[in-house]
Image (tube, rainbow over all chains, first blue to last red; front, side, top):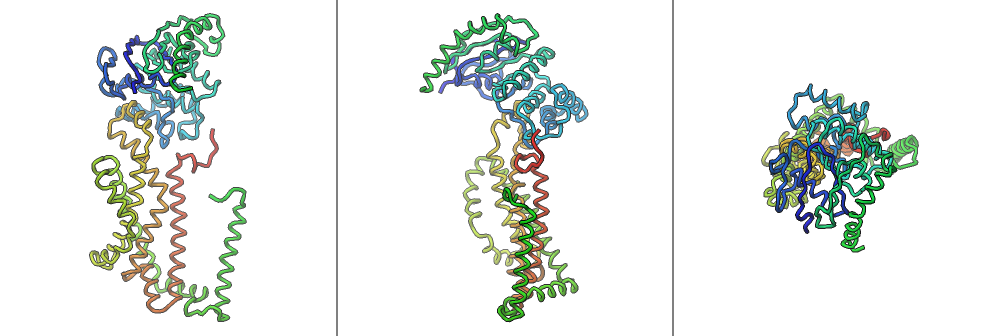
Length: 243
Length: 263
């Protein structure tokens, strides 16, 4: 089955771009293609002008599942990408401890993933990605499994970190509110096979608080406009699934 | 372990009561003539025999021999099980060709090989170690194989994204997953290793607990057989407690075996 077809999408550096679309529209496939985890059947993905042929080293990818190594502690999990890069031990220690502190996990360095809450595991995954300073971060519905309050908290924290780091973020979600609240630009995908239906710049002022911004009139205006595009696709996708 | 809602002290007290009652009934039965001591012996005689063996130094030799064979067999069996299991899991051709053989070997009672092992390796240490290793190797092999095959593909994808080379994936994802399966079958494998050593001794040896039991049986000495069995029970009990503690430490990252509450 074809997940994506004729997708042409350019993502400028240092932007926060969200991709929304009905479930099964190939959003996750797109991220796997960008990351180089999946070779495209046709077409190509380029990062900074060079085609992606293998897993791209300067890229972070946060999955919907935490995908932390269950047999490694918080510290060991965050250290992992540095261990893979053969970074000297002393430097690993300094960088890991800095990120442990920055994501608020001080005191939990020696806990195992199963001892942490969902929100804390997300922080570990975030620190594990940010510790090697990738210039692009892909996020595949990272906060879907969290409760509403933890989710707001994590989204604000993500925005804060992003404003300091200025990396490019490609954020996949099926939640339009989340997409608008976080992004510089929202890309709407069609139902399967996924294509780009529309691209909407979001000109809401920053810094933003994701919980507060949702009630502002500008937000609602943007929301209504994008929902016009998205609604038809959600309906089409619903029809595909046979009810 | 233990069932929910049952007081552990009560359970232990009942267990002690059962053991004590059996011993008393056994002893009385022997003395009153209900149980012929020639066939069934008596706890007092068994104790005396164990004390006698200890004084003569036989017990220490037998015990050390059996433990040595067991440990050696366990180490060799586990080591080769991990290596073979790993190779079968990661090399598709080996998997396709050899796994059916492994399943077949695993289903064969390995004890029938003892005569061959004694023929090939003599009645000394080697034949017991080989038997022990051959019994241990299969559960370890299958645990390693399964641990690698069943590893969450997301963890491998995640490791790749984080910059892992194939050797890193083996070291940080595949092996820990495989070892977690090996560790959770540690008690079974250690038990198997002991069975291998003792049965090997029973069928042909000149020392060891299995040999002591076989020797006593040949002398029509039921007391000797029971004394050997009791010592063996004690060994099993001690080893199993040690391995249980070790297993809990090695699998500390697993949700089920972890005692402290979630944070």
